[in-house]
Length: 384
Image (cartoon, rainbow, N blue to C red; front, side, top):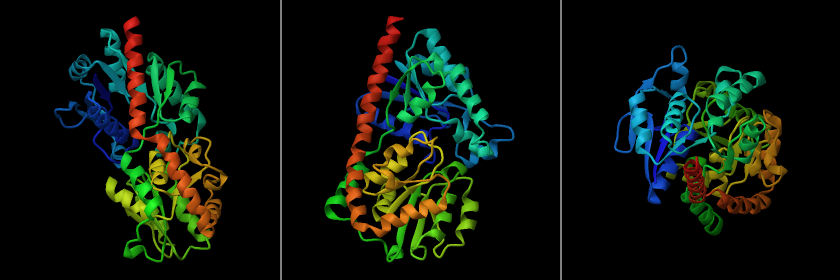
């Protein structure tokens, strides 16, 4: 198949939707498909390039999040849609709306993904918990785009349920964004051969890690503030992998700790190495449509401690209540962390169970299910 991905920002490694698109594209190509990207940025053999749309007033915020909207240059959009056998739209914005409109006009099959919770956007302007604002986004996304599709990819059952109860009428395909085999392979080594010795700078320390954008809804502040309530506070070393607008704030509040947090930006192999050294993984985010970084962590053989938020899909990964804590509560997070540190044998046993559970989220399996969704849409389109 010739598959067109439509996504405003593709070339970034600090955005979960973009990373998912990159991994799906690579796996689809490995499976023999031709994949091109309609996106903002530089032209290339694998893409149809659109100009970047600079938002008045909000552009500095967009830059902090490493995200840009693409400008709706219609001739490029038309050319891209005409090239494809099937079109897949990752986001609910202008270029996706225009690509869908033209695909329908010329009879091309098309599907969509629901990756972005409204709260992911509204949290950036301190409105993440204002229900009516978030509901307005759900309504507009549905009206302007999603109810025009027959098939929608949701990365979790939680996200599928969220859009179904808001009147989204398409068939929802629950497909994980998937993790690469390298995380599973590292986890298997760690469980069978033992974890590697810690690097010298971490010897004698308890390494606690979270991977994710440094933004309000990810709640790295809860992790920093939890350390003071832990009996292990003098030994804990926090490591946050990611970039984002809350960096300066987190550096400042982290100065109170015996071991100030480290902020790193890692490639895949470096991330796997760091996760393999880590003692406990924490995912404190209030809002997530899936949280692939959490799956990658327990795939390497880590027990996760997860915020039990009602607007997050991540609690689905907890194998029991010991891996959950009250969202936004540093004291309850410290309680959960201390439990696992107090019970190393139980932690090691559960690390093995978590590592095995990650096999359900392999990228190859996700892409196979994605292919099936595309084929179903192609067949449905041919009937109409």
